[in-house]
Image 1 (cartoon, chains in turn cyan, yellow):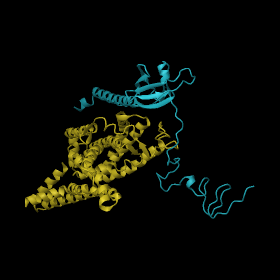
Image 2 (tube, rainbow over the protein chains, first blue to last red):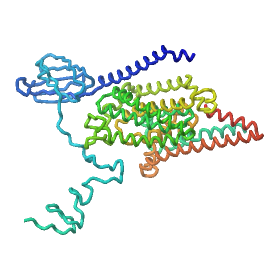
Image 3 (cartoon, rainbow over the protein chains, first blue to last red):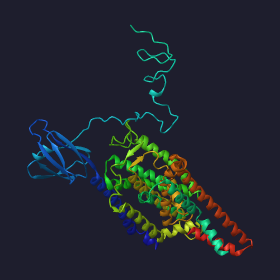
Image 4 (spheres, chains in turn brown, orange):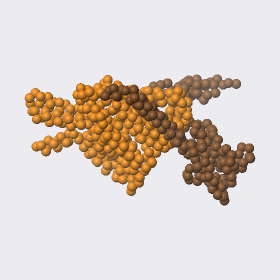
Length: 190
Length: 379
């Protein structure tokens, strides 16, 4: 009985099953990654940079059957999409609807779709690099360890006397800094 | 006389659930909330919490008590969710991705937890609780210092402005309610998250099936008496480790389901009270350290959450302070755990004394009854 359980055939089969499960595991992970990857598509209706392709005066665009978005010349809007392949339906004013299929690069989060270029049959999808975004209000620069250790040394700004800290009552004020109440005035600089 | 005795026994055995029922029913009226509102909240919270509470069943079957170590699984689930948000994987795909990524972590955590608990037989609950504190430190180190510095983080929206470490609160908009809304059904004033309920039902079926398997029977044998199981050839340590691994993996998935329902995640302390509320719920549902069933889970989730929903309103009406209701939640949670552990200890001691009396040649019938009661408890 135990001989059959530990025979080379059984061991090989077990190894194969385990390898198969591993392949299925990673395959499934890859599948959900690719099909679930979200992208932000900036729908752009502006003249091309060199001015060779002009913006369309008025159009309506729908991505993957989402609610249509109306754009005038010079407008931009945004659509959130999931996965790599997408269907874009564009209706230019007073003309028939045109359908296009797009394949988005996996690694890019935000892409710009130039509608005039798409209608002109040119490569229309380019990565979109957003400007630096300021940190949300109330968030520190991350040097404050108060969360993990409440007794930790606070930010320099919070340490009295440190550069950039608020003036301490009774302490001499730095040249050019506003004097604290009760502090001797700094000598005037000619 | 016998009727009186059996009524007394019923009261003793269901003291926690009865006490809770009385407090909850009494708090509904002063809360001023409509029954429709409470009903909808219960439907939502059943979907949110049941999976986590069901994760506690297998360790109880294996005689390891209430698995406070499930927090380890919750942390693994949160790690997976952070990665899903980082890679911007939307909807149910994001949840599956989070579960798949966290699976190896939770398997490892479960194994470590099981191995540690095997070294502390008889003191599993407190060991699991302390182990969760220890692993919490490792989790904080990974998320606060390693993510963004050693583990690459692409999304600037989740990383602290210093360049590494994850923000205190994460917005889970990309996966929010994705499972609940997958098959949402509207019936009158209520909305039912059918997909979530199906997942929970599948877990119930798995647990029922699992109990009938060889491993499930081994688990029950270990839970009934470790020494007898060992003598019968059951690999006790291995069986206990498997019970904890399964519980940890289920807790991982449970935490992901919980978080998708909440829609945001307190990165550093969302997992803190996972085990605490799951344990409180199953105890409120009438379970004990040695005995728990699937109905206990659902009764417990409903009762605990009805009280959670009505207590702020009741506190406001009765004491003019909504915060009293908030404190009441904590008080009730810890109180229920304490009461049920005290009752369990008291009952076990009484039964042992009865048994001892019987063995000394006293009332043999009492000893038999006590033995029978002990058997019933273990089932």
